[in-house]
Structures are given as structure tokens and as C-alpha cells.
Length: 291
Image (cartoon, rainbow, N blue to C red; front, top):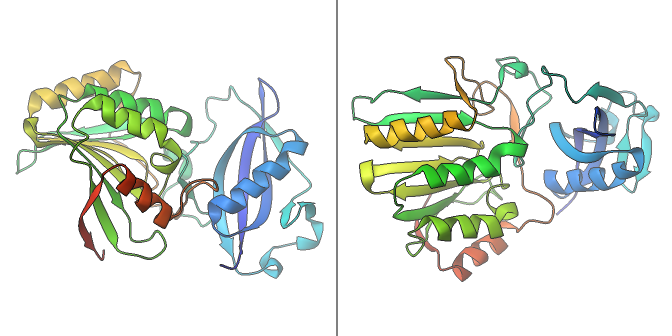
């Protein structure tokens, strides 16, 4: 596969108080590969604890404005010579998206600064289903997801949707019928964090028979709950509030109103390798379809 050219805005830390961000251009077989090359090259410039905050796929090097100003800092990795610092304690600093999804440089319908770590909760619809959605930053996503699983009643099922836009195949639903308790699901996600929670091409679903409850980490990295049991719903929302999250009526997330990219990390499994890993863990394909 021919490498593609990506623009990457990456921020990081220079010290305990000061953040820094820069503009990078890197070739890679996919976005995560280009990001990995840029991160490794940026280490010499004082970047640590890197975050990908914006990206764009470019047609060619000539498309870059003022490309003669770029500094080649590694093979096939370039950066603008000027970096910018900011205070890590700034309460108005922008939302850091979870690994697996990032906004595009193209302006969307809404201002990016509207995205906050907040949740919405909806009363039962005409089908008796209560719904909840939470947006969480990169640094908090995994721990909040594990807590969310613990907040469920006893669980009865676990599945993963492998999306069709990952290497342009069908969407596949893989079920693990033997993962019927919280500890087994949490152990699997912990051991395969890079290939599951940090993969932008998956939706991960935990089921509980009580209230036909479904907890989802979707491919846009939102945590969602659907249930027909009002007590399950109330207890879940109360537990999320106890973690420090607030309800809002102005709910914004990268799925709607923002151009964005999905990606996986450079050292994560390819789609074929991921499916083999699922088979090794006794997952079964129970559905495949075009979307």
C-alpha cells in the first residue's frame, strides 16, 4: 500500500505547567502510522504526552502552503519551524479527543470549542427506552468505560461491531457468548485496549437482560446507555454524576456537525489480524452487512 501524506496538529507537554503544539506533515500507510512517525520525530523537540488534535489527508506535498519553510525532522516527516506554547492549567483549553477519532481541518457546522465532557439523559421514548450519552476526553475514556460496565446490573452478553469503513469491507457483528460477566469483559478490554477501546473502527457493546440494557462505546468514542428499566437508568446516571460529570442540554460531539477521521494506532492489529484475535478468543460472527 502506497503511503499517504497527512497533516497533523499535535500537542504535548514541555513541563508540568506548559503545553506546546506544532504542525507536522508525515507520510504513512494510514493515519495512525503517520502519527506514530511524527510523534517519534517530535521527541527531540521537547514533546511528551502527545495528543493528536487535528488532521487532514493531502493529495501531494505541493498542496502544502509555503512548503519550502518546512523542516524535515525525520525521513518523510516535516514540521513548521514555529511551535506554540500554552498553559496546561487554562480552563478554556480545547477538548482532547480520545484515541481513534480526530477532527478534520475543515470547518464543520459547529465551533469545536462547544465540545465538552458532559452528558445528556432522555426520558423514555414511545418504546419505553431511556437513553444516555456521555462525551469523555482521551485521558478519561478508558477508566470511565470500565466504571460504566461496573455500574450495570449483571451482564449477559458482549459483542463488537467491526465497521465497514475499516479497509472497505462489510460491517461485521462478532459475539462472545462466553463473556457473560463483568470481570471477563473488563479483563479482555484491558488486555486488548489498543485494539479495541483505542480503535476508531469499532463499536463495543455490553448487554444486560435486565431492562434489555445495552451499554455501547461507539466508533465516535461516545459512551451510550439504552435501557427499559427506569431504576437501572437512574442508578447509572447517578453513578456518572458521582464521577464528576454534569448533564447538559447543549450536547456536542464529533459524530454530528464536525468533519472528522477515524483511525487506529500504528502498532495495533490490522483488520485481518483483529478478526483472528477475536476468533482466538472464541468470538463468532453472527451478522455481516453493507451499511
